[in-house]
Amino acid sequence: MTSVKTNSATPRSAVTGTFDALIVGAGFAGLYQLLCLCDRLGLSVRVLETADGVGGTWYWNRYPGARCDSESHSYCYSFSDALLQEWEWTERYPEQPEIIRYLNFVADRFDLRRDISFGTRVTAARFDAATHRWLVTTEAGDTLSAKFLIAAVGCLSAANIPNIPGLDDFAGDWYHTGQWPHDGVDFTGKRVGMIGTGSTGIQAAPVIAETAAHLTVFQRTANYSVPARNAPLTAEFKRYVKANAAEIRRVMRATTNGHAFTISDRLTFDVTPEERQALYEAAWEKGGLQFRATFQDLMVDRAANDTAASFIRAKIREIVKDDKTAAALSDIDHPYAAKRPPIDTGYFETFNRANVSLVDLRASPIERITPTGIATRDAAFDLDIIVFATGFDAMTGPLLKLEITGRDGIALRDAWRVGPRSYLGLQIAGFPNLFTVTGPGSPSVLCNMPVAIEQHVEWITDCIAHMREHGLQCIEARSEAADQWLEQVNAAANATLLPLATHSWYFGANVPGKPRVFMPYAGGMARYREICAEIAARGYEGFALSG
Ligand code: N01
Picture 1 (cartoon, protein in one colour):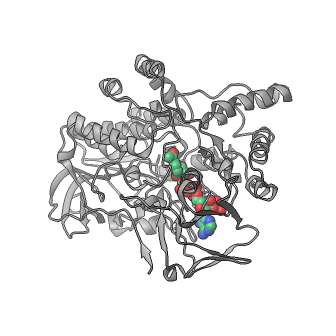
Picture 2 (cartoon, rainbow, N blue to C red):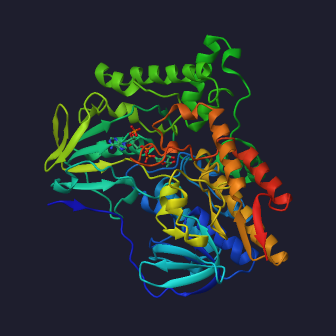
């Protein structure tokens, strides 16, 4: 029996109406956008959400070990002092269920649920030039209309299930980590194969290995990882977070990646090799994404980056006892953090377990999935369960799935055929009154997401308030402004080592046929915030506003 089990949501029907704004998605972005437009501007707003509950990406990603890689005190909204005082995280990195509890707490705290239609999947959105309104169609066949359409669909919400021949013939069960069943998966006594060693696979493998009879990890590209060093938060740290909320927020808004720590201003080669080793050891012991902040130049100087990369490779070889496995795990072909750097809880140690093995797909690629498992060029692996930790059609995927048609009947799919082209990652030429929260061309995935989301939501809210004040009906990014911004996005990426990981999902390289364009803005969140503010202050330069 072949079975595909996914997280499911119950479709609802009869969602109709006319609104000032429609928001797609009830994750971090959609919830805050709803609050801003309703409470601050008094607009009539409806949120359309496929899932049965709030959470967005966190609603679907319930895989074993799912936990945020940003530290909990920075992975939350910062717009409300009261909320910061009321909510208390329990661990250094929040686990998926705790994040869902937090977002439900926010939804209740600000009475947001009444404006959300759950179980409502958007299947198309079309700009009607005659009325200057967006017409949005749902899976149930309903049509809603609104002046503004705001896509708050997240960057990592369209699952990437590779088209490996034979999947339909597999007799066991298979799952994608981003569509995980709500009632969980019992791995007890099962032979499990997991494809993918990105942040997700690296979180999932140690947890799956605890109960599976055997876990086989299929690795195409070896990856760096630094220990997360997760732990319960102490009462002292909880007090510190509450007492210093304003300062923590200030740091998060002032740094490149929106985290609550600063990047050192030290240069890699300004210290002796012994000092450098000691600094890396201390960062390894402290754990987390902060490792990348050990030196200021790690992401811009290849020789500097090599020192961090060598340190981590040596750690992998030290931890993993089997030499062949250690060699495959540490044979990493890109600079450290040029792909999103994972952090882990016992990932490399997992390969010392008797019930875990690694298959190096570079040496022997997957040829097909068979009724009984996975066949590589050189071997066959019998499996009861296959886990696809194969990532997402990132950034553009969730937007294209909305089947958006803009002014003059242009489909977004056609407008972006050679890659996303967006002004500031906020608006697209040819698509009036459509805003994309953390869209391609904004810092988004290179930033701690709640920080990027709050900045976008507040900018969009201020923009709509400005339009109301001045009696303006339409805003649309100018084509030449989008082109110029794209040049800045490319220049910002080229000033870093990020483009050296050519197979990264930042380029769309993980999805066959997807245009190779570096999608996020790599110039840093703090600089981006200034640029957006300056553009607004200059009367929304680069946007066409009309009455
Ligand atoms: O996905 P990925 P992810 N055959 O694309 C492999 C965020 N996140 O879900 O590198 C064989 O990074 C692929 O191999 P390769 C975070 O931003 C956040 O892990 O393309 N293998 C790679 O190893 C992260 O970056 C958190 O050669 C195939 C893996 O699958 C983003 O989500 C936690 C394959 C995919 O790695 C995505 O992470 C987790 C194929 N056909 C994730 N296709 C938190 O903070 C793909 N692969 C909680």
